[in-house]
Image 1 (spheres, one colour):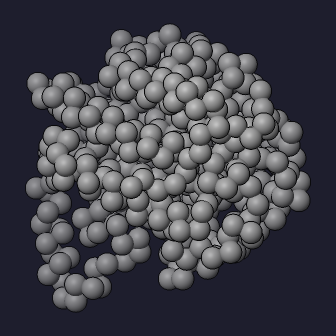
Image 2 (image 1 turned 135 degrees about the vertical axis):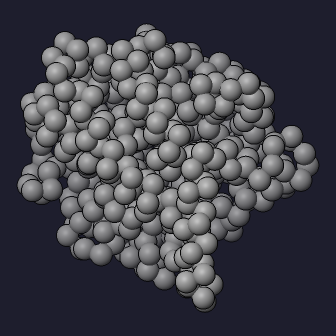
Length: 493
């Protein structure tokens, strides 16, 4: 095993040999997400709702068992068998401190994270620690767990101070662990202030705090506006920040139900994907900096919702996946696909429909899908006719069209209505119904629900895994032929 570092545009080991990281995000685990595990709304709401429904002790028992079973040695063995070598672990800050007791490290905070990192190391899999949820929420996304549609993190310095404090604790704890590829301090920041100066200030503080403790681990910095915009980053970043890689998130429109057209792999479609990718990394390429693709990947159709077209839709999505990988291979880009495990929407493995969890929550999850309550990858065809008149009313009422565009601009009016009404208001009103489904269950039954997420109770998305395996084999073969010293990181031509 060898510690990793950034050397120019490349990630290398201690001998200076290039290491291409290719893996997946362990999302929905230490940072739970609604589409991953079937709950409505935000993690903070369902934790409160479940405690109200069955008591705090039993609720904590369920969540701890969920963490125990979701990622085990069996998962690491399977992951390694595909030729993958890095897992990005998404973490909610709540595991390490409480809002009513800030800057007091929870004794149990490192319990599951330590376990996952050790398991991965046993099978020669690197890890990246990703703070997916910062105090106050760094964006208005459900995954930032702020409970509202904007990131309070940017409005209150104390939230920022607490994130710096948390990274000091993490750096102290993990300094010297060579199987940790690095730290991803802030997932998908979304600083709403025009010049984005607040993000650079935060990155300066995080860099200095971590480097005062740990000079060795790579720091992976996401761009602003959900890891897509580096335009306001400092021109001297290459000397200002040490041992840094810069993280884009390269989702393509062709990987979602809202695709503008079926994906056929036409030259025009491939050209659009290439141009989007190059635009996202352009700032780094002009300055000779290292790029990492921290998230990307399609979502997939499910027969229970999409019927007969399911296989055809998924064949298109696998083609999208393969064509994106071909783009990345030309650059020998390191990446982390989203997602390793879920209920069957995007994961490499997913909980079987025959498990206690899927049976117990099946009707509720189906209702949530029909109502398009989750934002991620949603298909709102069954409720669009309800929301379209509201969108029309807003457009008619706000006569200056420029006033309809608020930050983030990618949240066009339709998306803003989706976020505020369906994924927040409606979802929040469904929390008690979800929590009520736990009432009357004893600890043994709660454990059976949690155990449904264990690897042995999951199915594999073979089409996805085959594409990833073939890619890994090609990268490994090219490295062998090049003697382990092939350069990378330059923009494709």
